[in-house]
Image (cartoon, rainbow, N blue to C red):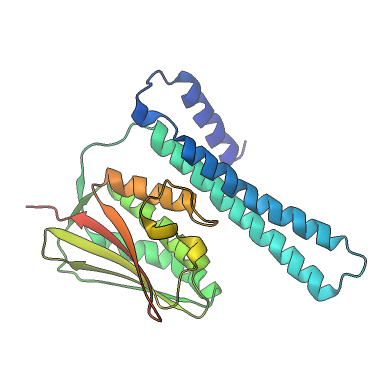
Length: 246
């Protein structure tokens, strides 16, 4: 049994044995609708490419293009399924209630270094700047790390090639620390929900599930996320977290 099948079996068991019917644990119908729509998009792409591959007048370069489309659609489907599993696990697993002190200088470098080779493969630069004097924040470390991983993965996948993505953090002076992910190009509008106001609303292709996951993870950390765009300067994703008092 592979990892995906095992996780699916485990989640099915939790659905069957769960006796708590509180509204907080109900699966949001809008989430199910968004999940169905997003999971269908790569399938449509694959079916279209397979049809085009059957053309009798197909040229070698066209064949390469359609095969590449199928590969990219398969990768996207894999990402979406992973997001669905993680969202369901988040809803079905009892959540920690105690926040802990987290040093961003200990967390950020490891996540960034993991994704730097992937960024390089996409002709992008990924870097970070976190001061050693930055105070610790209150969060659930595993959730904050998962949120950062999801955002970096999405940024690399959606940002323009030959661009630069930088992760920075600073003390805002209002009892909070801002963790920023900035890209020098422009994240495609299809990679962010309209207005970024509610992650669980109907989202454009490429973002809804992953960003819904990020919002829920940060909510458990007592944090928030917002987006800003500057013409010619790129997109900035800002995570706000409370400073851990001594």
